[in-house]
Length: 484
Image (cartoon, rainbow, N blue to C red; front, top):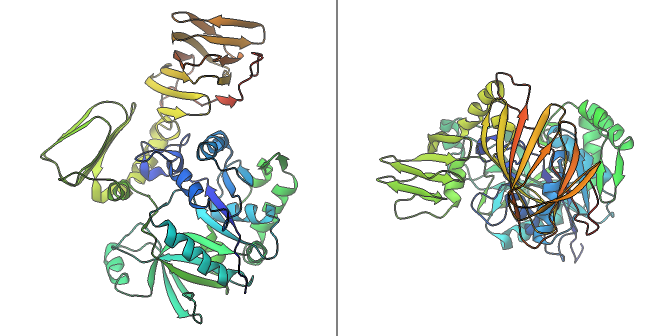
């Protein structure tokens, strides 16, 4: 048995988090949002595996669209990735894990730890202890260990697992059975059984074992992942699988593809004060509360209200005479729901995808390496937003074919660079940007630059104006050249 442990984390950061709408959207899913903590859930996950005596640098599997967010948030917490695997589109967790283990050139003695990026864990010491326990079981190269969380309530939004016989003196058990998300009555019965645990979606195994299990249990996915890798490309510490080949993968979860079929599954009980933060009720449970059990963030006012979550990132919100409600206000959208029904937010998002996809895909406020963009008004053929470009940062843009932009510098000064122009634009001056113009905005000063953006399009449809983020953070260069 080994005296030292070295674990390679695989962080799955490609989820959408629709149940936390309107904060979580396509351009900024919940794992990257900073809702009630200085760190996002993704950053909390990265910091969770920062113990260099126990963990190697992580592999992060993410949506290609969010690469710049991942880069910036990892820099903020001071942890560099071993590898970023940029999926062109989501194909569920079996494909994501298949990509990671196929690309991971792990030593024979090292094991991998799969972590979703949107979980909250309070007990760091217990987490590391459970990792060590699981490592003892997984190190033989013949066991896939999943973490089981002891239920604290009859939760209908989680999957469940039942543990079997204990393996020797270790707190490791055979995995008896997986159970789908139950209704409330069944959940109340399940949590009475001491062998029942929530399925946390955290796994530990040797990469070659799981690669072989995927090959045996889902051969088409295995072959398609291998093809997407062989036709993909490395750019430094980033890997891009072939987009066309990856799109051909049929989505399936790792649980369905491997864990429910393998004969190598085991479970380690974990007392981690854990939540998958999959609903606004879960956010309320984790947040600090006042004497009336209300949790509030932003400019909010509560009168004769109890047991509620009230959040505003825009307008002032006042709530009176209500119990157990959730109110979440953004610049462009407001959610009001019963605290006990927040799992149904996913159904509302489904309606929006049909009627107004912009509300689902685009965040009103989007932070990036260069600064922040906040939508103030979105109506039909035009959109008004504010841009904040941080000191010594640069914003590069490829303007869309039918869109025209007017940029009014509210404060500070910015250097505007295009194919045929380079000029300094000071406060109270305007920049007119034609369709298809490539350009960059460079802030060479030590103060942020504030800009008002008016974007116009000749094309509208029943969903209104569609804004597709095209800002790409570029490393600031003191040479002040056009880097768009």
